[in-house]
Length: 585
Image: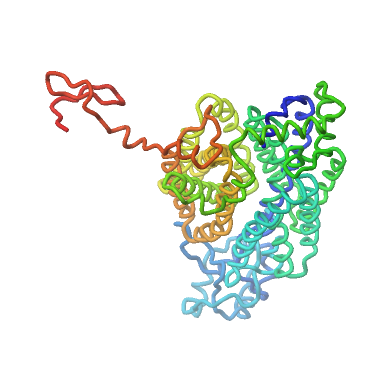
């Protein structure tokens, strides 16, 4: 059943499609807002042990209080105040000592106290006994501060991100099925309502477990609500305009990341921030009666009456004329297309997941695409999560992480049209991966590290756009939906694993970047084995897919055959056409 054959009747990319795509742009904001606001809601700021006896001096003489109660330890190549240890001292004696000093003496205080009281040199370290003080200059309150999720509970926020990823994995499967069962339009608004309600309820959470339950529900909806606008937009336009839809919606997603940094800049308290990224999204429900159902889905499910109604609306806006009995015309054309096609219902019903692995060619393509999908999801989510950990202003870092994606689309758009998929995918991944790995050499230079991080983010952003397009053109039609579902579901393991990788950066800041860079580089090299799909007909059956072989650029580069043998017994390379002297095969 080829809906693309009847779409030109009403216009494959007219005024109507452009209006709907414009309305769909804000629909990707919920995913951008809710997937990454958790980084700031659970932001981990500098903290140190609280000592109640010294609290009266903490505001006026913070450094004195820290020097007296907190030891320094080596972290990230520098000596910093310990976050979980304090001196085991008689603080009552210290208070009496401080009371005996004048403000002028305290203002010039260095480390004289160690010289004045001998017992301090014999002190040892203990765990924090009275809670923690936090640096609240950036954020006045986060869940970390409110529920003391530090030291022995430091892993709790990482676990929350892991659970969020698990929710996404479940939601990607469950809501993907419901989307095909209910339709694109109602599914989107059900996801949206559930996501907004769960995020609003999380702002009223009374403890960490309750907050984590609500965030898990948000996580379930995030990948599904991101997919819905993409699917609806692509199904409304012809094949030649799908690249445009993909690029434009990715631009809107990147804009969502930039807008989120602006919201966080204005709203710093975690409870108000949860409301700020949720309540305004209720405005999206104003589009409920304007957005159409996908006519492609309606035809696929046999609902020709509603499909014809949507098609008439499209034709009216696009100034196309279609007959009043278009329902019958549509039904007739679709049956005709099915009759002459190579795919029958019996063929589709006999297809299963094993068909992705039966032949060497299909198995290799499936494994390579799936590995690249996993790598890209890991690194894109990982770098987005990692932005606040780069040091300096974490809101500014996150803003840059979103803003640097825009230049990639300027080059990506013409590149996909004139260069192709494979080399853009490969180059994007390798450049991004190498940039991440190079941070190891400049880990003490924050500015250069930030530049390399931005290059890495640009690379993975580009690859993240190209991969679904290339995959949809590589998988044959009979297994296209199944293949992309398998690859994307396995890719969703990335957001589960990557918070654990980032957590490893607690002691070595660049370690997660090295791991992500290596993964991205390997994925980029693997992409070279995939065939180019630009301008090629889409494979319909498994047999068609077998006729599109894998490539081996490394073998082609060094392979020389005995063609054009000359009198000097030389050979001519097939690739570079340069004569190689005195070489016997």
